[in-house]
Length: 221
Image 1: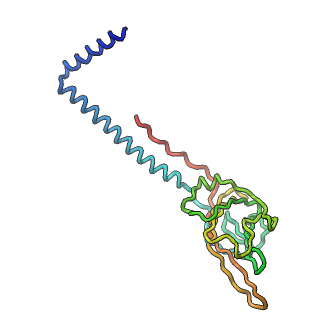
Image 2: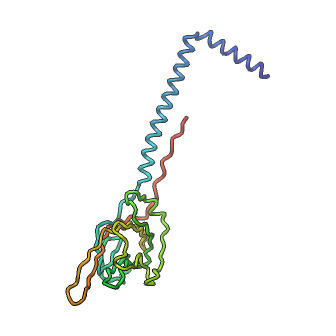
Image 3: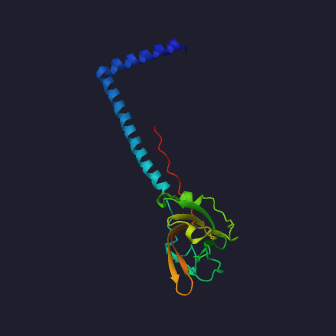
């Protein structure tokens, strides 16, 4: 069928529709079509807002922590998976130990039993996502000053400031966020000027879990 014949046939169909329903009927059909599209658009906008809310919740998703708390370290080690503290640093489940340092001696935070970490610095912990924590580039590197796996090894006056954050990965494969809260300094009576420091920290340990499926963006029909 030629293009001219198709156009002619289409015009005849339109004339037939006009003749059958009249002008009022045509206007009613047009109004119905407009209302139908408006409803479809309203439904899509509603679904889009719901998806945006779901996406924000998905981005902030965390599994339930397996251990968390405020801890003080001085002569004991910390198991990040359970929150238990031990004085025997040779135990296979110890992740961290801290030495406060005296005058002329460095202060250090040491990783034990193949724990790996990433320095994050002074960051807002509320903005950290589980996806960021899980996908971080964890590593174990010996410190140049000590030749041990130390997160830091500095003079007490140059230790990381309160608020400093580390990402940690335990030997069991779990992930922890550790933040330095403060240092407690106490003088030791006796000849000379001696003191010891305690490290006050907050940590939260999460299991290694698969991220839930990403919410699917609605399609506009």
